[in-house]
Length: 52
Image 1 (cartoon, rainbow, N blue to C red):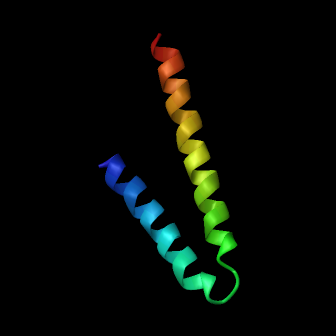
Image 2 (cartoon, helix red, strand yellow):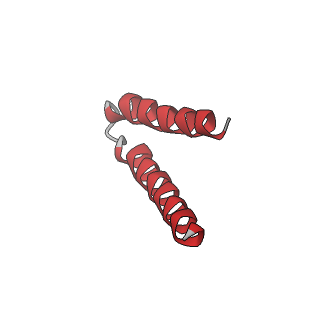
Image 3 (cartoon, rainbow, N blue to C red):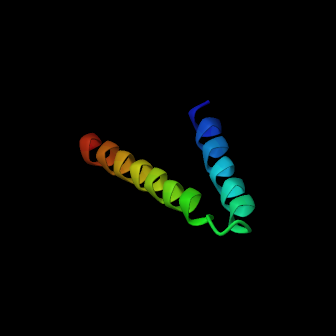
């Protein structure tokens, strides 16, 4: 279930970037996407670190 929510968020941000790119503000959703993926990476690294 969590993976589905992650995929929906990523898809929404990518679609937002696609539609807003024509209006010259496509960097905003891409910035949000990078922050979200950074958060997921840090969360994954903490889980790996704590399991050892």
